[in-house]
Image (cartoon, rainbow, N blue to C red; front, side, top):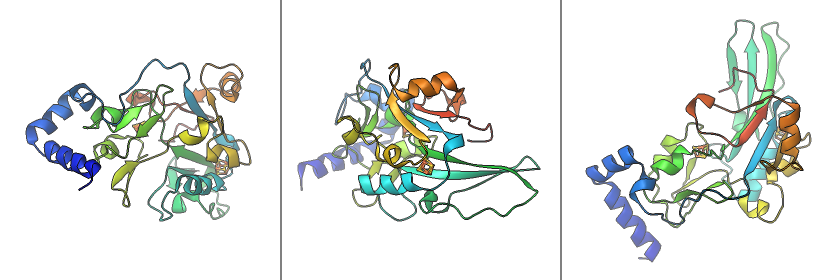
Length: 253
Ligand code: SF4
Ligand code: SF4
């Protein structure tokens, strides 16, 4: 058996012990285990973030397709690193949400209906939380934060226990059936480290998605923050997301 599989097997057996699972759930894995693939890092100088200008998104789905191609995400409609949701707000105050195949092929036209007051698209992805619940629960330190604030998974250390998938309040993670490890958006870390844009940002025809560094005046994010009021998803959870939305309706969860 390869060393990686031996290590995974050992850690999986360790996690099956009730007292270990109890300590992880009460103390947090990052306090119990010293690192894994990488140690969580704080205090880096760069902090990458994404901006989503909701009023600019036309629901074309090019970003979803580009992400799947760039990151070898399975084409089946259950696995997404990013997806687009359509919100239709009715005259009764109810929000109807759909996302056929994650919006990868766009959306069927809505029929004119006096019952639909407003319709808009909301791109979603991992929020690269500054206080990430997924990092806290990972029992082997496989999910970690880079010095520049991006949350990544070390697939050599991940044992596929799904704790992070359950802990993520944004539904941003899935278990890749090929590797049996957790996966999610990385902000295209392999690209941004070469000063390239994430694939979804590069293909967006309306600049609904923008990318840059927080705190850098020349970043397009700086202009977006200056010109708009900024919202994040589920602010009440105090996860400090680094995906920043403008013109986000209060109905969006
Ligand atoms: Fe982790 Fe989910 Fe936050 Fe992404 S959105 S950092 S997967 S908790
Ligand atoms: Fe919206 Fe841009 Fe994605 Fe098209 S590519 S769905 S406009 S975010």
